[in-house]
Image (cartoon, rainbow, N blue to C red; front, side, top):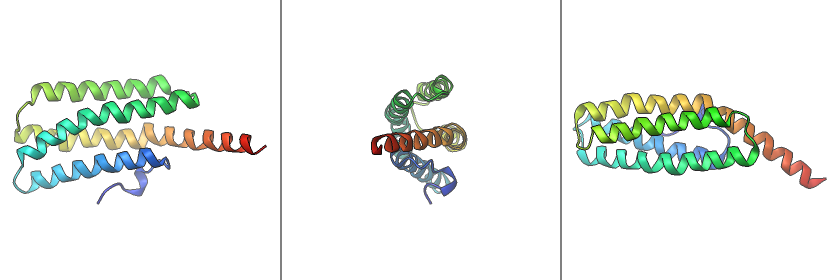
Length: 139
């Protein structure tokens, strides 16, 4: 399935990374629906830890570069999510059906909500700012 068009921000790197994350969460969901795979659970939690570091840092660099007005709010959302992932990993060092279900239901919901609210606003802002810079270079 992948990234639904309604979640696209119009920023290629952001949409590509969101796509990767959504596809991973779908694989976890498929695994949970069949016979839960402990390796998929471990991979997903490790990927999420890496993802939040890389993806959020990149978003924050763009916010700083373009002077995003909701920078502090957006970063606060990132920190909340990072704290949730860290706590989850501390409490779920081994596979469990409950932990896997929590990832599938709660973490995926947070991701999609964040993309629909914060990342949509950020994407629109970046697109406008990039257009301004292109126009300024042309004149």
